[in-house]
Length: 235
Ligand code: FES
Image 1 (spheres, rainbow, N blue to C red):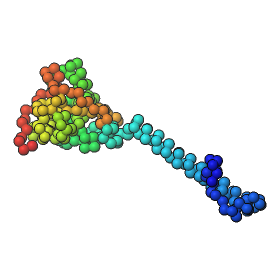
Image 2: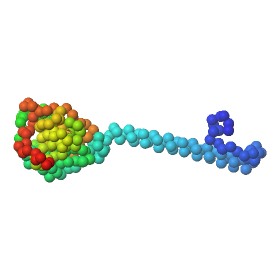
Image 3: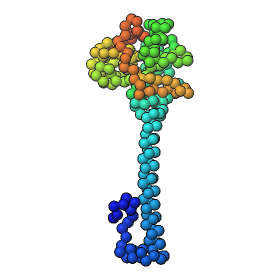
């Protein structure tokens, strides 16, 4: 094979073909045409492979820039219509029936507090605390929050307990109110929560944006009263 790169894609020819080529005529023209076709085919194949690779790279970049609404955990997820999640007052919540709903794909509890829920703060203090705790106002006066299911102590999944209308971690007993506020136990802060918003009557939970900064509440920051029912020993 020639050291010249332009000949690398050409098949070696047999001694008989060499004789014909150098003799000229129709047979020589046919052999030359076949070799040229092969070279064109190889070039087109290389261009096609390059095109597919480039398209895949661009598609991947777009996916990360604009996550789809039906995305995996770590991206924005459309979890359904608002009307699928009826609101309730804190003391009346029942898991997956009213007020609090487990969303496995988002690893979240979606909490919908009724417009007549009683808060411990009011006015600007209440609005500021809503913002700090990713609580979203709805047009009907109800509020929503999307809580990450993971206990902020050592990471166990925290169940919602209907018997004491609150979240109680089975691992070391950390206890959180319906809106994720810390109640007692070894957890260093309140439950983490995700950004959420509404789009055309549906709920988008952005599991790529987490708020891990809600501290133990005190008299100036606590939103909801503690639940009055004790958790039963059996869970
Ligand atoms: S992991 Fe939940 S209390 Fe320890």
